[in-house]
Length: 155
Image 1 (tube, one colour):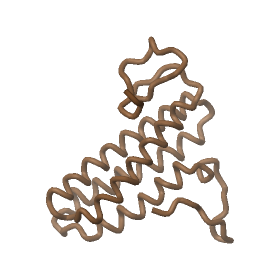
Image 2: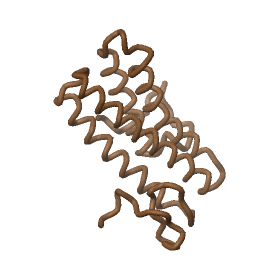
Image 3: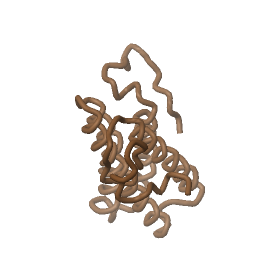
Image 4: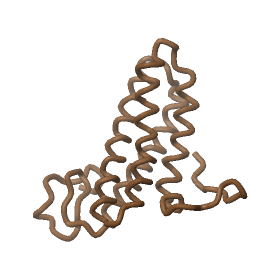
């Protein structure tokens, strides 16, 4: 997936989120999934197709909304929402693969890109100055406050 945002006359950086690599990659994932979902069967239009589109849009949207907030705590909350939506997208993609709506050739590179995106969201979240978390984003400052280890951290 392409990740760089090219600046042209029609596409100038206007908001903080547009500068974030993680937002750019989420936006690229939006385009790929929208394209793939066009090939889902018609009877999935109001079910799987609609759900996967809402889930993947939520990833980039939550990153953007969080980056526009005034505190790291608020940004962390929206990154957690983005991460959850990414996990939902992943689950729906597995169902699409199981139902043969996607081929392995389509699924494998997309899955790899989503894994990378998940790690980048987690890394950005951990970089924020927030001591507690409701999600698997381990905080370095006070491990006693963490409720569970991150699935993305080395064992």
